[in-house]
Structures are given as structure tokens and as C-alpha cells.
Image (cartoon, rainbow, N blue to C red; front, side, top):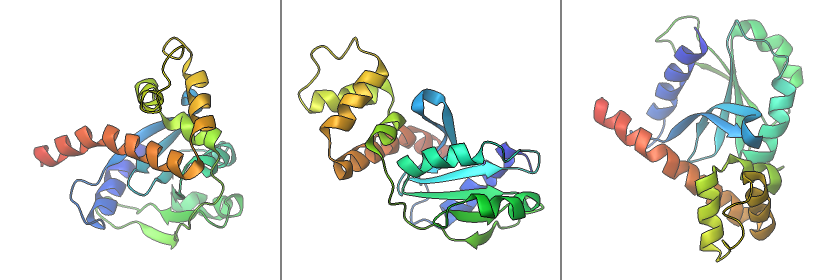
Length: 191
């Protein structure tokens, strides 16, 4: 299966396991100004799924993983069977691992369940926010003067400095949920 097919099948399988039919997922979530993109994120539990199809390389996996470890609560590698032996030693023990089925319609095989990440870094977590979201947070904190014309990086750095980690995690999660909601509502209307 190609990456787009894997995302669709994975989203379907994961949505079946949740309590709501319109569980919010986001694709290609940018970190560090788009330097890294998380393939699929289940925003309710901030679970990042990094997909490596049979035609993909594992060359960037370590770099991607180090960034994911600073921003997401859980991370799971979703990989083709051919990458499994090489990928396992590259991953921290808290990452989950799933194997892509050989044919569409089959279930993904869970090799290892993801554990909670304990290495969040505010400076990376805040890069999940888009400009409008970041400005809204500053406005809620009563700090907008002088920031509307600043770069996104400066705005994000100010938020990382202002909010305690747990509050920042909850705030970022809520903004991602809000971003995913229109998509989830559209998807549930079209089915």
C-alpha cells in the first residue's frame, strides 16, 4: 500500500477503536515551521503516527523521532514488514510499532503498544501552533501589543516562555482539536 492508502486504512481502524465516530485526526502536522511533518496525529490523545511504506527510506526516522519525542504524548511507527528489523533498534522503547497489512481491508498488526512520552519540550511543542492560533493564545494572556507584526517563531517562543508545560500541552491539544473539528464534521456528513 502507498502512504495515502495506509493513512486512510489506519484512520479507519483507529476510529473504530474510539468512542466517537468523528474522532479528530490531522494529516501532515507541521513542527518547526514545516521542517518536520507528522504523517497522522490523533489529536485527542496527541498520538503521532509516522508512516513508512515499503517504498520509503528509514534515513530520516531518527531525526523525525527526536522532534516527535519533544512534542507528542505518544508516537507509533506504522511500517511495512520489510522495514521492521531495521527500524526496531532505531526506536526508543516507548514508541509503539504497527505493521502495515499486506492487503487493503486487513487489520494492522500491533507489534508494540506506545507508552507515554516524558520528554516534552515547550520550545518544540509550541511549533505545532499556526500563527492565528498562537496570536489567539497571546490575546487570551493579555499580551498582543507588539506581537502581531512579529515572526511566528518569536510569537511561539513567547508562548513557550509564558505557559507552564502542562497548560501549554492542554492549550496546544485544544487548538489541534479545533483545527481538526471541521474536517471530522465534514467526514461524518459525507459518510
